[in-house]
Length: 314
Image 1 (tube, rainbow, N blue to C red):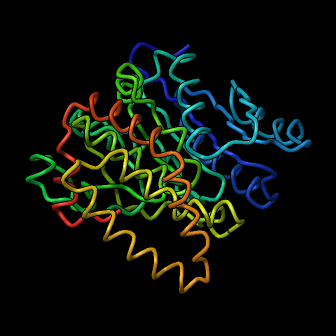
Image 2 (image 1 turned 135 degrees about the horizontal axis):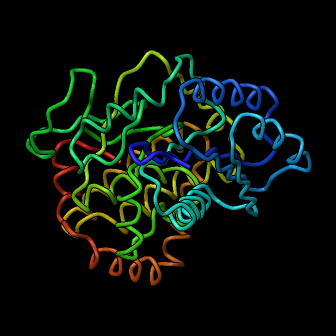
């Protein structure tokens, strides 16, 4: 049990498919460093489409944590997996203060790394709900409000998300409003930024912090099967159509479409670009219904327009 003054921290390890042995070894080293300073925590392994050797891998993690929970999920997209995992955590650990989210393709080199980041997040205002060591798109302070931070902190849209720390209260807020955490329809690509848009439109803030103790290799991104290359075009379209204010939808779609058209031609993937638009047209009824459902629940519907006005391009 945690002492009254000790924070309850849940560590979520996100795995997908048959993870390389090198990443498993790296993950074990990461967890050993994270546990080098004591805090009350449980490890939740979220494994979508786990391999047969999952029991063998599971024993490694059991040696590091006092409690390990294996959440075995069927093969599914990134947004759906993350949503299922975060919902599992907030329902089964309702007293958790923070959730630390990790992927397998990161390297941590600093002792007590989590403790340092959590101590930093503790000193930030309550409306700052995510801290990530990933690079961020910097935003104007007039938009974010006068948040007093160190010079190494960027107030903005965090990227990559190989690792982040989130206040559980923010996730509970999203679920209570029927907004979900990550959006299940975001299969791969753009699911992270779409999640951040959702938080900003609920008047929360997200920050990025420069740190020398962390590296994200992005190994999962370099693997480019067909579904990943396809959702690279589909994901932004869905995010724009469902989240962007009406005044911006047409303008942003034109800009994004021209940009991705050029990219698809350079990559010889024009057929995937066209296929993404065909998917949208075939499902436009459901996309518009979901857009209406989403926008009627946002606390600040026009906040995304402010993000775009500050040169934020999806």
